[in-house]
Length: 257
Picture 1 (cartoon, rainbow, N blue to C red):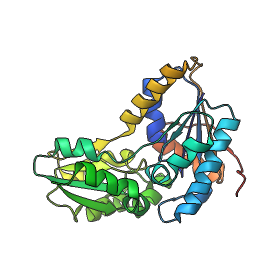
Picture 2 (cartoon, helix red, strand yellow):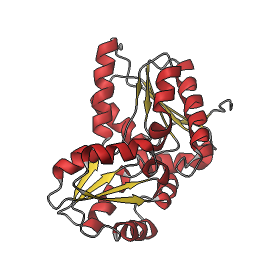
Picture 3 (cartoon, rainbow, N blue to C red):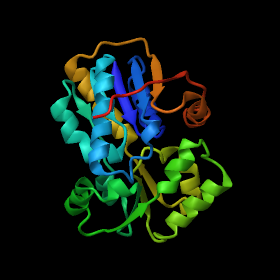
């Protein structure tokens, strides 16, 4: 079984990519909705929540843990790799492929404030984007829109247009938050057809598949079970909007440190 967690529903986009890559794997998804969004929270709190999520997934039988959240990866992936007894797959904004794709030398990264302020993000910029202009666009309101399932309404469209107005000449946009891939049609419409959009979900799925092969992860029956630390009745409709169909959703309470 592969365990996947995020602060909320955004990690479902990574889950979809993993399902496409490993259709027979059993997947366990945990949305830490009670603490969503992670972006504005202190790093110590994000680390505590990430560790609680990771431990719960392992306790349920996960043989690989995927941190389907850029903010949690930036804050806690090294901690998780030290503390958990299974391989941990993290993710980061696709700055390297964006730099390779840009023609104008102008790249926009849409992410949470926590991701953009992290040492990992600064290291990415220093390593790959020294000769490129990078617009770091903190887009916290978009996380809330996706959590509400409002992925195609006028307010969300206006928010996207407002954020992208700060990077009018960017020809590559990096989706640096797993909540943002469901908004790709809106982002593309606002940015224009000539702008390339980078989503790292498929790369995370490919890395997960490599690890699954390396550890000899047995094939399962292709199940997907979803849990939340929030209220399932409130979250279930938005989950259905993001995933594209209704999924069973149950509540879980995680211990806090």
